[in-house]
Image (tube, rainbow, N blue to C red):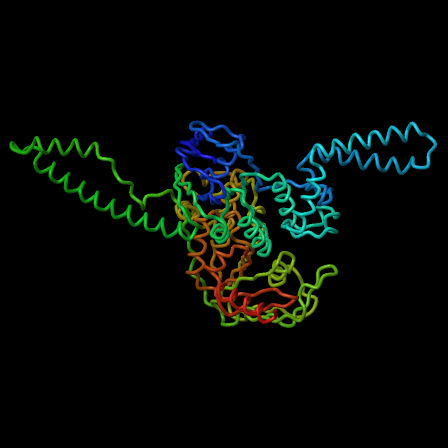
Length: 544
């Protein structure tokens, strides 16, 4: 259906894409993966014509209809849900507004003696009705009625303003607008950002069910694994295709790396032997010709790339953490409300040293509120929140931590401000662990990407020892290599971790206990994410 053929793209002096070649066939669900800055979004923009490739071309067979749900999707807050869905069809919406206007005028003049005005309105009504029909307006309205329940909206909700709904529901509306256009190919750029688990699961099922082909950019590995049947990896400006889901890609990539490493080691041994032969017989009267021949062969040899020598990825660890007492935190009979909504009611919880706990619950259930209560940013209405009595040192990573950085400072200035006694070498080594190398340490924070800001914010949390971490959506804006590094660092961390995340892959890698906020209570599941899912399934079966 669509084929990228030898695509390259140069931005000023930055060669982002070098040789991109891959294709999407009818009905395929493709996960486009790679580190931040690898050119994933650039490819989508080239596909829809927003950017021109420096070299190469895109072949489209059959003129497929392409729709693009951007990372920052656009909805009009002051429209009703129905109006917003209808806005995808500007001609239809314009006529629809005209019809409403005419019908309102007819009501005003229904008892009027001005027959000329009435006749004129009736003619306008007839004309616009026929125009509406010719534009398939009635069909579109029928499709909107069908798609509303599919998106999870009731008929009544269709008349409510977009601004009354959460970000997750607004994303559904934006997606609904696109699906009404019946695209052949759907482009999605980080669609799960800021969505709760329930909405993410809905989106998974939705994308799996549709007949449209999908090109998906996401750092949510669990999501990619569920939805995609092909993976395209972008690495060092070059693409490589893997048939299968994300789990298959990981297995195949590991095998490829092992195979490449073996081939590299064999070739290096051969090169070493060749060099020894050349050096030994270069001046030999009988074998100098052979030595020169081998030297020419060696110079022409296509060398296998060292699989270890890759683009530098973030590689950090937490500093050794001081020991705390066994009881790190106790919540007693907590009751708290926000405006008229009860968030917690007589909730109790104990957290012990070394536990790594994921806090789960839908958006608005009180996850961030709980963290603010623990950090004394909020005072509980009823009950107590007690930190352990022995040497509990907390660090709090807030959801908007990256955006709160002073954008007038440079990266290295920010670190020096927090650790003024460190040497420049120590600071640069530390920053290197977070992907800031060479001149990038002198970048101003306003120049950083979302992923770079997130890594820098994490660096500030890690820079000084602690033994109780509270992390609110720490993987937001991080690319997959950075997430993998954070998982590794947290698993090596000897302290206690309490974290909020919608990243199920991350949760499954880190958490050894789950706390679910459910009906104003803190329900504990003493096991990992897989154990939690099994228990929830069992509870659901029993209740049914």
